[in-house]
Image (cartoon, rainbow, N blue to C red):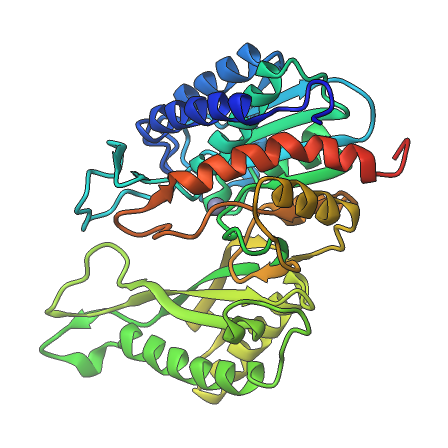
Length: 424
Ligand SMILES: [Zn+2]
């Protein structure tokens, strides 16, 4: 016997069909960060859909002065956050999805990145799993609930945000820290895979190191100081330091893959002579980046201090003066860890009713927007589709997985309302 108003198979099917349609329309809008050229269009679409599902919706434009000072990687294009709310009893269950995507990139074989296509039960396009697919699943779940005429048993919220791929300061960071949103429970339908949710993620610290030498004509190199060779020395010594300093550290949490339980730092993702450089000129400047990932036991401040002192120490050893180099921070995001308790139990129960067993939560090896919520006391989980070629050519979502997520998210408010402490 289904309780009155609980979404059944017919409603879930309507929600699923709606989710597929919304997902196709979303993928067709190239919301690439950091450019953010089509953010307004995507925000308008999402706001319209939420309104049609009975939510009261605010489209929040990030203040310009905030954007300039906090989101240095972002372009000048305005940032929009879609925040919808369907008021009912406490507590509040909040879904967060980022609508920005990484660039389309080359190498696609099934379709072009922003021309969604369904083939063999899979929907292809940039953002299909990371994470417009998750957003579509949430909207599909709301649709299923509405079709069933279900009064939500708790307050539902949706936040659709930009800029997660560049650290989230102008998306989730703004919503939590400036607007002051404080939900009790947060679900981020990021591509965790359906086997188990994530209850945390690694952090990120992204630095840009500039090495300064002296330009000279290539025919008389002794008159210059080759900034490329200086940077190469610095980078190699730093790599040795990283290998020895981090190898003994290991998170006590389960992170898949196993090697991601160690902190990592990758050097040289961006590297080169500023401008173009010339083959017949001794390079007077050379820039390279460091991408440092933090395990949940670490924090940005200590990682920052540690790297700065390692670089200083290596520079002294190499005979560099203080003016020979500078280190600039590009983005940072804290790692997250939390104990989601009844939120996990409720998810497990909803997923089981939708036909799948869900395992114990693990930690995401990459970075997510979860930490903005958990540092303010929300209980949070990330749970979404398989990671089919996210950030790569031929990204796609399995439509059976999308259907399962629609059903799970449509049932979650009911299982959570039963398990959550009253008045929390
Ligand atoms: Zn993502």
